[in-house]
Image (cartoon, rainbow, N blue to C red; front, side, top):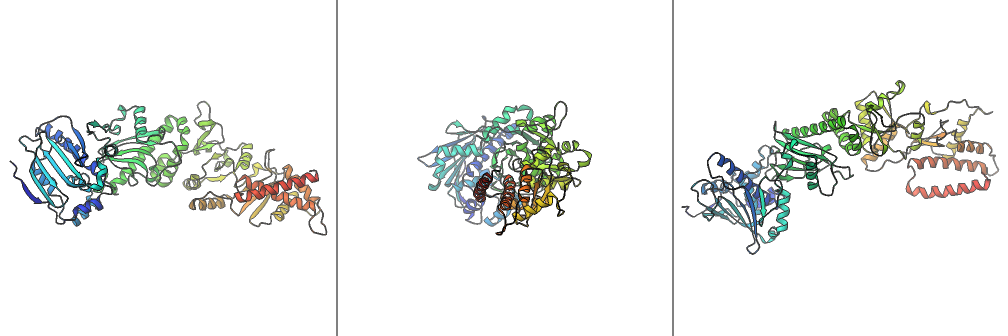
Length: 633
């Protein structure tokens, strides 16, 4: 028969409980996770001990949570292996540290980080309870029930208890400021958050709350597509269905399971914290795993479950070490393999979801050389070419009549003279004039992304240093120009020179370089704004660093199309002007105003007019049309 005794918990300071409350655990609610986890461990230990013949087997494992509003208590019960009096002394009283300072030093260092230390997990209950009772009966034959009680000081009592079945009750007498934990809805939420996929049934007031089965712990052969989709819908309600998923499963050199999902692009991706949920043996730990997976994969969703990821003692933070980096590399490789399989087996589906995949792949390639080697042939661009028919693999048809191509596929269609120049467009509306010119001459143009490709295209050039990427509005080559001979007047000036002088005088802006060319095609515009490639890239990079949309740089080129009817009329109007005693004639003034109007129209096409400039432009346009009407033009 157990003799009642009094004693002190073997800690050399009375400050350990405040330290547990304030310095170890970031949130009080995790006490329930720790106590239920202890119960699940006890059930698992009983099962193994029973197989070895060391104790009775008992009924199916179960965790029961009961609320007593009048007594203001919360009880967490299990039917696990239980403890003898000696085990209570060893596991509860003799906490494995000699002082508060030693505890913090030992358990918060990376090399000694642990999870599931029985004493510490149990003591998390003092974050919410003013007194904790433990009633336990060991499943070993001939054991007697034990009752242990502590009020949060180093003093405890240990005496004979009353319990007929093997297992443990942890009874929390809640503090007044912690009475939220006698609300069933609050406890139900905590079970769903932390204990939903624990392999043991967790009951609240007689009702089973948790799902128990963790699909990621199963073999992919045992799961259907609908199983994967249902898990996603459960974890991320009202987010639509995932695009594809990657099932992770390895037991060497570490144990890791999981399912990662590519979500539909929403524009709200979290590239800093992430949305993947981290579990340890089916116990929810955190939804911030930026130390585990590479940054470019953080906006993926799903679950990673591993007992081998080192956590600090409160499970609230990850410790970065070589193993964590290795796990991150494993996850990245599996994601790359899945993308390669989809691109090979179902290129049409791959193209259809490319817009959502692109940020992960492009940013990942730029940040991770190994990942870049995996996905280098998987990067797609929209293309002005028509989608391939029959057995031709490229361009690939996408949604809404779009066509996609790889860099290799694009280069295979270039003629030998231009096989090193890659034409691209980042804004089909803003660069419409230049894009139409190239397309009219049969050139294929890649359709790139405005933001990510500001960095990705220079990275591609670095990786393929033999190539030159040229945006459609950076310059126009000879294939887009008519090289007809121009006649010179008595002063030795041809029409191009006259137009250049006319626009230079009218604009009076040394930052704008005037070029005059005869462009091919009836649809060629009167004028285009051209942005030299390197100058524009510097401007775009500055805008990216300042987190703003790239505007029109002060220094740019105005290309005037002397074949356009408006420009031809403008030249005639200027040639017919005469000097007056007051300076410019009305014809010359009109020619100058029309020149500025042509320039502003070209700026407007590329978004180069600020909102506060549009009202003035509209007013000047109306005034100019009125004057033209008066002249009968």
